Length: 250
Image 1 (tube, rainbow, N blue to C red):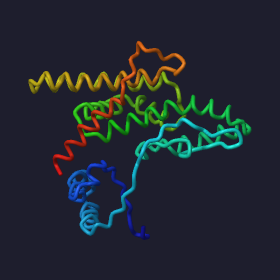
Image 2: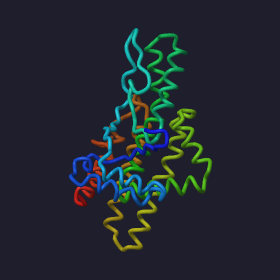
Image 3: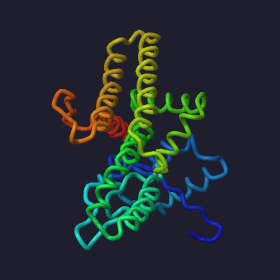
Image 4: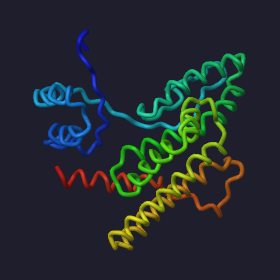
């Protein structure tokens, strides 16, 4: 980037990347939210195809190394950069490794325990903010509403992502009201539009997110079949729905 230049990073689904009209789709998808002072310049860069593409992927934190070799930061696992949790996890890894005095097993046990909640929240927030489906739109609208009405809720979310609070109770205290509020939101909308079946389907999807959060909140040693862990992530079907919509538009 030049001294007087600006680099902008846009999150684009893989289905758009493969479309022959991908640059037009990127512009149409983002032009309504770009500052007017930047919009025209960004459009020119897209038209000139001065664009770099990079793959974003999520890799769960499962391995922290082996005796004599410790992994920290993205070498352990990584999340989407939108939530900025990766840097916080990396610094916390370094501090925990120093405290462990080179004992990789002790380091892993601590970080596996303390990284679970920030990673879970980062995964949920990214999907909720990135996917354009009725359930996820209801969830993120409820998030903004809760943050505006209850500043303590917003601060709790920040503390969780910053790894200053790694308690599962705090995560559930933030996540459950949001998802219950989202269920109420889709219910009211379906009633107003007289579309009960669509409302039931959307509410079921949000309930699936709540079930996923509840399951993931239980320590592995205490999980049991009655909780019925979903076969796949509840975001998977929503992701397919959103990508199919984009594919139809292209």
